[in-house]
Length: 397
Ligand code: AMP
Image 1 (cartoon, rainbow, N blue to C red):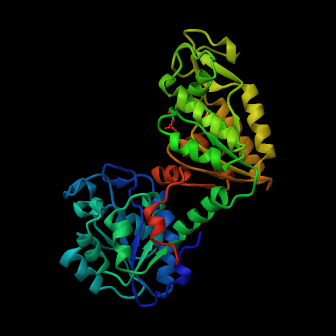
Image 2: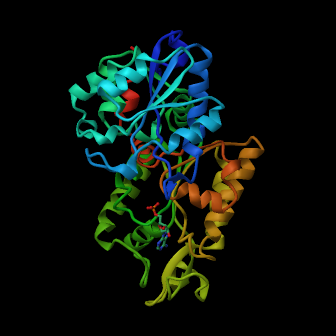
């Protein structure tokens, strides 16, 4: 996948409009987790170092086109200034006179944050008038928010219609690793997909069976597959109406030479609660009142052996109800094995989407993975094989 990066951009003395994702967790008006601010530092420092004027744009929360005081980006300013070790200006609107005057006053190397783009109704509608007004503030556009790249909004793709567009450093890193995991991966590729429901991941499973060599299905969604194969699932979370869909996915896997790994044993309890009395059972021994809450130890052995054969692992979703110990055991054990193999240089591992990051963090395995995507929806859409509008806008001809 060829896309334009900051290496292709002439930035000296120019106004760089940078779309970041500063939709950070806040508590009582203060930034409570600065991970997303840190993620933007390489791009900001690169541009400043090369003499650009850096104008930052982001959405924050869901103000739905209205000015909502507690959804202002102003609290980000002091935290970002601290991280950068340099002053950061702020304009109380992302377009109009306030923004124009603040930009006009900038010198090369300065950093300015504009107010929440979602204070304007045109943002989520990708109104060309807003795209144009934003673009008027800059000479070039840098998209550094992969997590917003699945949304065709004025500040993600609208501006790119009017200005030359480049991937920022975080975006570039994300696209490079995603390409390594699914675009041009080293085979065999093993995908591990867990989570609650099949219904939210049908497109994803269908895309994966056509691309990967092995697909491990875990979590609540595995129950639907077990049910489709005629196994008892008792009182488990199970979308029985999707049994046909599960069968279509399994048939498609056979056609595409993709090996499906389902649990071969499971951990059951009669209560959905932490430390509920539980037992490991074979697939035919799930009782009527039992809930399958995790994959069993034999399943983990089989998954770990599949990882031993793989050169690439791509992971989304937990293998069990990981918030409730001990039903986090399979996710933890498998994630640690994946991290160990990665550290030993035996495979490339990429994970992302929704609960995956917290599950891997909880397992103490996240820092062993090659790359963890911070994006939720965008990561899933990419795993579904969809073209992301933000990425399309950066493709070189
Ligand atoms: P998702 O958002 O689809 O990735 O699903 C994550 C959620 O699935 C987590 O909250 C898990 O607790 C839940 N989950 C995983 N396995 C099971 C299971 N066997 N039964 C019920 N919930 C599960």
